[in-house]
Length: 235
Image (cartoon, rainbow, N blue to C red):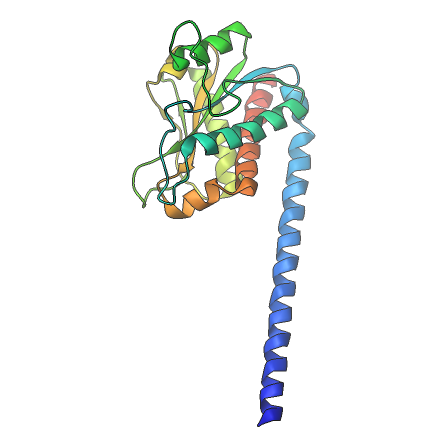
């Protein structure tokens, strides 16, 4: 009886080791493919060199935005992803401005942070404006989605390029870009988009959105989409 138990435990241990080994190999291979993909995009990063990009982490100040069922705040997710995006763009040679650096917002002389976000883009001579948000509805909805101003053909092209990269790289959305009447879009003379990175109201997606690795992957997909858009304009 003792021998049978010992044999059983050895089998369980062997299976556990095999499963852990497989998990490690899969994780390493996944990370290798991710790095390889990033290098391929970074080889094209010359497309963003010299571009002036305003990255707008949505909400902040007294307006924290939506909140997930587990208590994740939208404004913090927006800022985290925006920082990663700014880092990628800066490494590519772009000049990047964040509309906020922390949980505070700039209300400036106008007393309205939305006006100041648009004004920043005008003041620095921005070429692109990318606003990062989280969507919220109910626990069943999921997936990232891009929005652009209906009167901006270039905004639509930028939105389509970013949406395509998010769909391809993260494979968790089948949504398509839509036009929307939003202050930060309609008051721009440059290509401007709102990136709803996912539904924070969805428990599964909320968990992803607060994961630093996923935040970085989302930011890189947005970055890759920006590169695709700029390359298409170089043709």
